[in-house]
Image 1 (tube, rainbow, N blue to C red):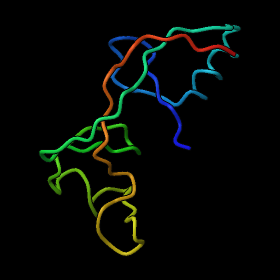
Image 2: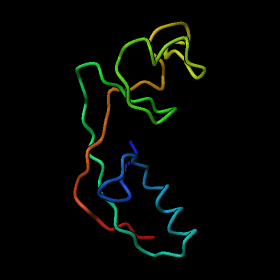
Image 3: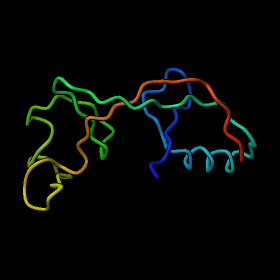
Length: 99
């Protein structure tokens, strides 16, 4: 089962899995927290997201490839890095998380 992702607020650029927020609530002694659902969207047109560096870039070899110190091919030989994805997330509805 894929983890659900959420944004901390309406102008957040990065989203995190539910466990991140549950840990945050425990550390800050909260029993509930308002967050925004992260709605996945497959991008096209040469835009990608690097999961390792939390970075959005274009699909040129300038950003992603053998020149990157975290480059790790999915097939262990060559090709697309395992940190490279075409999934980006939009803000969805505001909800409450509870622990």
